[in-house]
Image (cartoon, rainbow, N blue to C red; front, side, top):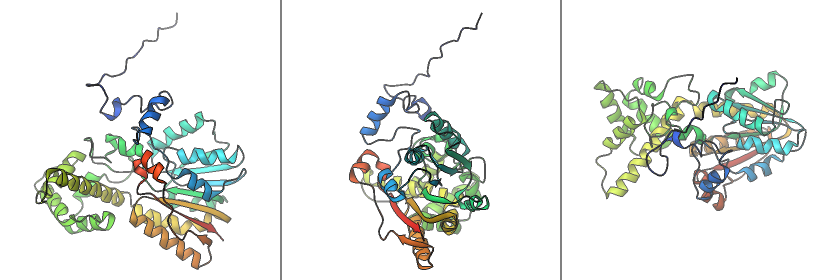
Length: 350
């Protein structure tokens, strides 16, 4: 007699709506609760654990993907852009996708496989896009390439990844949680001047001196800054001198927290350095006429892309680059608030 399968009830939560990331069972199952998820999106919010792809139409217009093309998605993430590009191939051609996050890559692989995109048309590699020259060593070149440099919403929303201070979690901030130092470990290896420079260079933090001084003071007392809430509380305490009403002070503190977390994330994952490697190597992995789209969300990243594209145009590697940034529409920004800071640039291989 077959063993009876017991029904397991979902975990109950306090109140009328779930507040904790793991309790948001509808948002975390978009395929099963499609109507609920669409209702959340229509209100201009991003469902927990889900990433809404930005500038999809603009990117596809740039890449002009045709059946039999070979493409590269440097930042697989949730797979939204990847899915759209695969559909353009109409079952003919191939997309190679890279990512450094082993946790989300496996989830995305399963998601895309459910849509019918198997290894005959899609190859996913756990590879930092700074090393895309590995493809050239295998004789693989691309007709189109995309790099979406935004951190995926799945990573930001999950407190266990340490990217957000909205809910307490370990102070991690690594894109690949299996390699390198966590943000907590990194802070212990810095001095005040180095931390101040990181905050200024990576996020233009106006109170870099005050924040870095307070962080180092706290660390020197032996206190462990090992959770997101602890770091956010220290940042708030360092800005106690701010004037104004409660709401204005709260907004300023929130923005400084965002910039501090961003600066540390960029430092820990060496995001500027790997982007420079990508920009240097991209021309060598593209076929003649190959089209490149890069989506940035940080002024420093956009400056690097603009500078590299101009340099490659001047030395004859590219035949055309975008003169101005392309931005998401007002309608898209309303539906997805995370699109506001997006900037898109393109280049075409000579």
